Image (cartoon, rainbow, N blue to C red; front, top):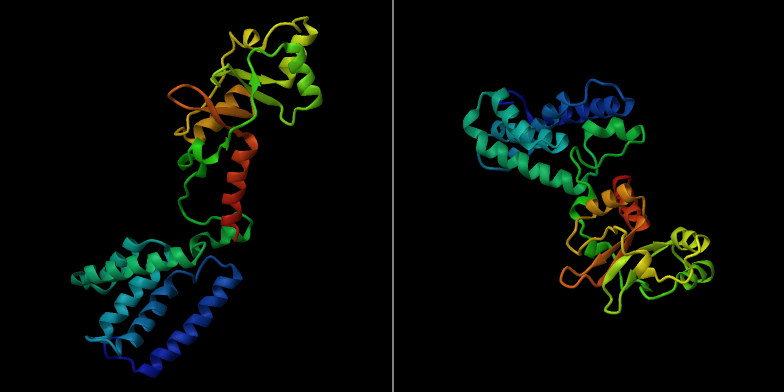
Length: 269
């Protein structure tokens, strides 16, 4: 494009090649997707270069680097490829700048790249080539339900069984002492088994004294909480204050599933 094509020819090439590229992309073929981006970017850069200082051919190369980097989500690949293809390596700073800017715009505007478009059409929606598990950067303090309902440690097992039979809205509850510190976690199944075994007059604190209960701190990663639920088979994990072990919140399996659901909904938009 270094002075060998007039503006009208470049416009015609841009329009025709864009139509051919859209047809190839829409048909689902494996070819004719990435290579035309170089021509489209070069034509766009050449036309913009008519109004910018310097040679239009230079801006054609910058357009190649930008369009390829933004579409493929690979700024360094596009920048190096354009400079190497044109044998104009001194322009690397400009191609890297264009590729980085195009990549930033692409990430903000587009949910997916062309490289994952075919996978998305099969129902596997991928918002980025590399994703982060939402549970790995959320902390228990951000996801927990504060001030959960608890049971007293001095409550008789018969009363606990009656509570689960008549009033309980959850399958398990934290058991605390007089200062609100965690003793253990009791479930409906535990209370009924103790009642059948004839321990109705015992206290919850005595029945749970030898039990090992998993708990989390506000700074614990939610991914660790999910692993705790899988290992213990219990769907609720108390969150305690690291200073005095007082129960300040609770995380349920449903809370973790909501995070997954929100992340999946964002990817499918």
